[in-house]
Image (cartoon, rainbow, N blue to C red):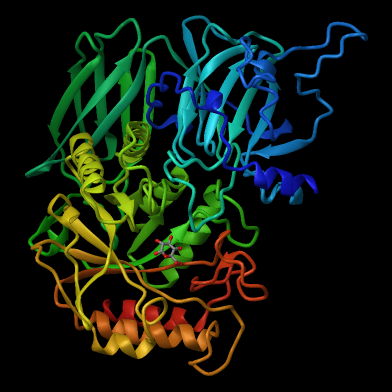
Length: 603
Ligand code: GCU
């Protein structure tokens, strides 16, 4: 049985010892990529560890010193230390998923150890943090043999303070990453996307002053378009600081004093050009506190609902959307660069979109920053996907934490207008309690944006669909996924469907679509042909125009993406083929159907 098969079968058995939740790391500092410090990207030595041998002894108990994390170095030629990552070990690139870097790891789900050695001269009066853009799914970090902590959740950043651990030369950073799917996880064991594992985003050593600008939020003051408002928090011994917030181009600024906790709110008048899709105006915003200075690029806009309308800067907007998975164009694998983000968003722009749904998890920060620049409105989502353990408090804690991390990272992005708490989750009381709590949390963490979820359709008779998920009473905007003509009936069924909703709230069709293999042609009744997909799009577009309360449509999906649930040989080959583009960037016929519909809005 070749190693990959052995590894696959071991997938679901997550040793309980691995699941001991350590104290969750504090939320990472805001705008981490702009901070001083050093990139730790590059080639890392690695060790594939299907039995967690590096962490658990033969009785499944964690080694007291952290095992491989302790960085045990053979002391003499007769020393036969097995728990180590010699420099001769295979290399993998960071950032990057391990699956697309080595064929034998394409299906690997388990533990893999990473090691990176570096030199860094700590400066007096400074603090050092190890920052990870993301690691799928669980990561345990060690520096110079000291366990720093761990993080769960594959799509959000985390950091550990290492001020007292870093030495000038020969630092050994060791990270254990485990991507095994787990029933209590978020997501759980079933996803229609590839479970790419590893250190999938940037790793940096951040170097900040003793007391630094840890976090801030700034946006148009609610109900006062001529003013901006927000808050700032410094972290460090000098918690009482004078903080200056400036928008130089607008000649606007304010000085505030932080309290004992290092926190201060602020508001000040500013005459600004508002950010919107047609004119994505960004401003330099500079925050200064003592020796620390952070600069950011921020757009100022308001987003709200009025009955069944979505308003951006007080003006109704129809969301012309497409969903995107963080699958890299051309090469496949998890997206981690600005260039790849820009390619995907440019393809969406070419489709005539003003809106993208980043499915089903927080994408790389570069994605939302490029969306800011390009003027694309964003739906950002936490991976509460399909069925999860609704009654499990640890599952709820993980979902809430991933939501909080997503909001913390992207709260200053003008492009992000919607936080989504879930996708296609089955109705039920425990689910409703779980999700309504998440909705409340999102509103508590960010009162300036709208909260949504992608709900499932529900027929009230054989030709009427009601968008009436009970979760709707808590949401600001209802998303609803439908695959009429593909999973649900034949394409002509779309011509007979009527829609209704009891909610006086905006409704967005958050998914619709059909599969096609690029370049495969035939009549429009032959499945998997471009003609079949295009035919469904034609009927979908006609149906949209018969739904009076519809405020947006989001095609599933921009580009074909890898999925373990798509095995059809010579058609899918483990790719979901519902893309309007192939992974090589070829436009399928349906692309033009939707583009013409979206461009018709501009006339
Ligand atoms: C679902 C789901 C997607 C999935 C899609 C499909 O609606 O939300 O994650 O990929 O359907 O079946 O293609």
